[in-house]
Length: 273
Image (cartoon, rainbow, N blue to C red; front, side):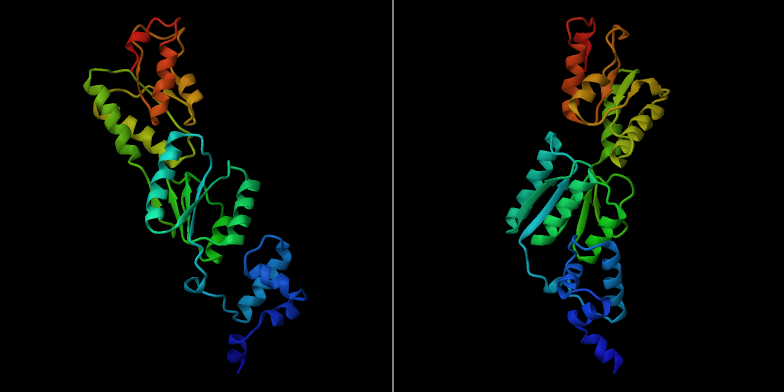
């Protein structure tokens, strides 16, 4: 009899047991953010204890939308990701919602609130770290997640897609070695990103395979922005007559470091890669 009652538990009954209003229970069930953590925890515990059955994903109304979430949008690489996702989504009759959260907790929270209010077919995160609370909320809402080039260790249940970072860096460095270069510089990306680490590892592997000692002074810190590519080129005051060739993670960095070595005060401008 008790199990029969559990199967038929209502939102009104949960609200009465929790000492809150029916709309409050409804907000908790729908993942709304305008509920205090203590109230949410109490309601969730009662929902679990009394076996309240949320509507499964297959019964959700289709939103016809796919969320594509970046940290930043100011790079040609982001444009290419958007173009690829939009092409496939459009062919499937699904719209694409593009958002940038700029590595800010407040922006991520606002995106989550907006997404809850309209629903989504799924979320693609690009070079993002999914904090445990966000993971838990997306899991609770039964929203599929895919991560492109994850920052840090991604959730085990989330499919991930990565560029051939290690192999690409290896091949680029091998190409320069094949041209006879021995001093090869590398403008790295943010060290917390797995794609950045893979690229540095590929660069190191190519040098070591060729019997070239890795000179850490030739690995310049960067952040995938144009300014970092410019700053990462060797200082003209200490640049040798033939500067180290550069293996760069992002194409537009090439133009930044080329501009640096092509400046009027630099004697090495004609040999820049």
